Length: 158
Image (tube, rainbow, N blue to C red; front, side, top):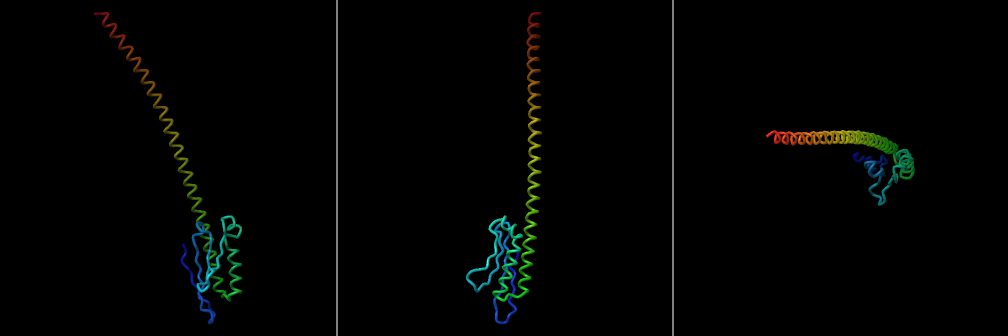
């Protein structure tokens, strides 16, 4: 999670501080910018990942909001630059999260392939073991029959 960024307005009559807070994008999917004196924060958000992608990962929405805030509240160009940097950082975070997710997905697929191969090897080993056990049972049965015949012949000879 990014730290809060704080920029004070350059206008001497405006002592408000402009805060930027970036929440982990894939969890909450929103960027929040607010003025503490106001009761309602200015919130720029995308309701879903689809909307966020449509809004160029929030950059377009946030840039438009920044321009509007600049017009309405005499926001300095430095604050707008900070906003744009926050957006760029947020987009990098999103890209990093996507890469992490794809790596995790690839690793999970690799592990599942290895697990299925291991299961197949175990099943083939089990079938081989059953075959050996059956063959051993047959040999044991033949050996028991031959042993019984030998005892019968021995008794006949006595």
